[in-house]
Image (tube, rainbow, N blue to C red; front, side, top):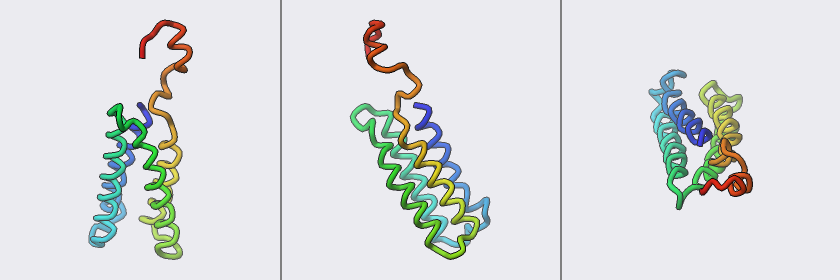
Length: 116
């Protein structure tokens, strides 16, 4: 589940980034970043619960939205929007990693007698 931990850490960065880039006076950017960070954090956390174990795949949609917003909000994109593009691309890569990526394949575990 290391991918979900990385997503949660990225959500924390997204929540802190308006203060790092000194745009906290722009309430639209501040609340948008905090809201998106909360969505990413929630979807990553839901992936730990077995019935919603694929919730992290919805982060793909959030990351595509971040990339598009960062690219087309203002031309040329200021640093905060460049951050949105980079965070979106990073989340896009991490969100497709399966929850059990660190474990051996299921068939190997079954042959070894390890019960899932």
